[in-house]
Every structure is written in C-alpha cells, then in structure tokens.
Image (cartoon, rainbow, N blue to C red; front, side, top):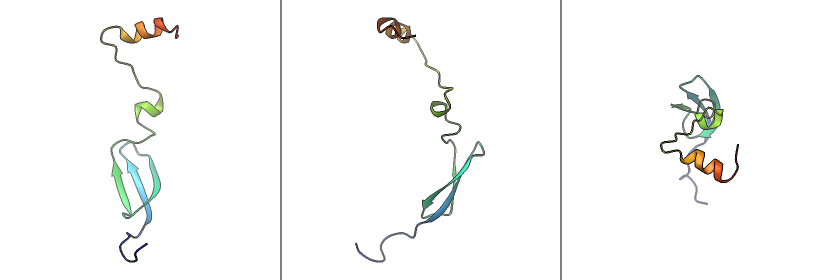
Length: 66
C-alpha cells in the first residue's frame, strides 16, 4: 500500500432530516442526509403496495398468500 495517498478517516456524525443521528467513519466530520433507516418507509414497515391493475391481488390469489 502506498503511503500518503489515502484519506484520513475520522468519526463522522450523520444527521437525518427526521432528527436521527449516528456515527460512521468518513473523511468528513459532519454529514446531513434527507432520509435514513429510521424514517424510510421500507425499513419502518409503513411501505404501501401501489396496485394499479389488481396485479398484487392476482399474485396473492395465485400463490395462496394472505
């Protein structure tokens, strides 16, 4: 590995728009993001399936799902 070409990694405080904050390693000391795992619908379980032509219901009926 060559010397003096790699960035200096330090702790970075990442702050989300929802107020959640966490620490990661980065070459920056602070980051601001719009969405994180605490407020993203996929991770919170509030994700909705958009069914435009009944395809989701047809799939569930075909494979006997809920």
